[in-house]
Length: 132
Image (cartoon, rainbow, N blue to C red; front, side, top):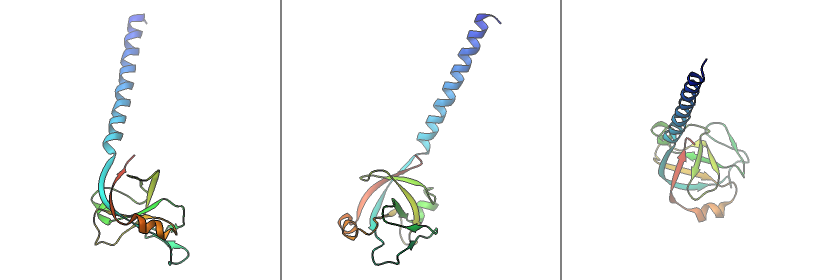
């Protein structure tokens, strides 16, 4: 095989790999979703020792968990155990519970046994991002 043909084959392979990698990166950005929602906080204070979520997960203080309104599951594509970033909070939270049907575009952030922290948080608008 001549060097010209070998060079041409290498250029084609390199460009194909680059286009495939770029397409993957574009797909990842495209799959990421953000939405502004109302947020409140909840604790396991004054509840049974082992708080059980709708999907059978036992919540324990220290877990970064959220409950989400059902429209976020049905209309916006969140799923149980999805990882979510919340504006104003560090790290990722996991969708481990769902809320009553009456709520829309709402999350409830689990704050363990820290009732005063939950009260200070109150109710506010946050942006959630998922599909990371």
